[in-house]
Length: 149
Image (cartoon, rainbow, N blue to C red; front, side):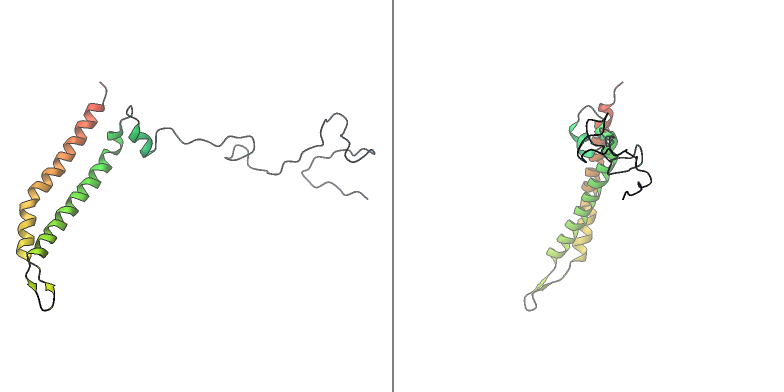
C-alpha cells in the first residue's frame, strides 16, 4: 500500500532494501525544507538579515566625533532646552507668587499673590530669553565649527 506523493514534494524512488539504507548516489537520506519563505525576504533560509544603515542612531552619532552630530540633532536639542527653560521660568514665577501670598493660620491655606507672579515673570523674562539665545548661539557655533572647508 503506497501513498501518492503530496504536490510540491520531490519523488524519490524507494529501494527494496532496508528503509534506513541510503539511496544510491546520495550519501544521506533526502532532507525536506521545513520553511518555505519568499525568495530574498528577510529571515528566509540562506539569506542574511539586512542590517540597518550605519550611523543613523542617536547614541551612535552622540559618541562618534567624526560625524556632524550638531547638524543632525541641534534643532531637536534646542527645542527641548528652550521648552525646559520656559517651563522653569513659568514655574519659578508661580512659586514666587505662591510664596508671597498671605498665610491664613486658622485654615492653613495660603493666598496667591498675582502681583508678585507678574513682576517675577517680567523681571526674569530677560534672563530666560538670554539663556535661550545663548543656547542657540552655542549650537550654531558647534555646527559651524564642525563643517569642513
